[in-house]
Image: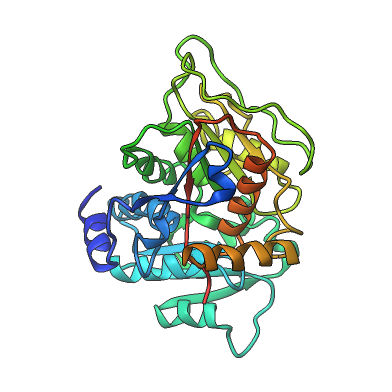
Length: 341
């Protein structure tokens, strides 16, 4: 990983591998399904979960390229901005956070923390934000701030994939399905890249589930199909585009700076993005989701993040309850980060 990454890992308290624990829950057990939680939320107290996994190879590339500044994008409560600020400080990089929307004073707790970690904050109006990775906007940022290493929103680029792929290698037990939340697609793409392909047939993204409550045949753990399947749970409404985003990240021929414009690839692994469990949209919630998260904490002593992980697990429990997975199936659910303060 390089001296920069190793130094950052030590300074940020990164503990690998993250724990893999079985979740004992009658709502799962009665269907004969075995559910394991990959507790990446416990990976680091400062840069937890998929944030560290996505950033570490970006940090190495920035250092090898002679860059002294990291620039990235995020919303007003972005955990990605805080993670870049912390990682940059640990590695000796200056950091710039480009925030969606207008500046509000005083800063909220999240931006205050990023600022305390040394991040320079600047803002883009929402119209310009839609073009934030265009050559024109990036050039304007370079004229203003000078040279920088650009990390995209959420940290999802091809450099993120090997770090996320490593979580698959940490799973010592055999499994049939692996799930994660999806915001920008990097974690799911990294997981897919680490799964073995079907040896005799190039698989393609499978169709996402229909609306909750619709009947689907059980997805059997087939001995003739020894490799696992990956399922991502979109955290935002209208997340069908994420299939193209993930496929583009997996396509080595796609332009690395603008994966959303690349043609979708078909990796030799079965995978899908579920889009029916966004619970109203990004950073939104519903009484149903609130009740699930509260009940989960009572049952298991784990407080779930509502933006990503809570939605994934609520969706997964719904699918298990609907008989979507055959008895004997082992599922790994990646807890990509902790609940917000």
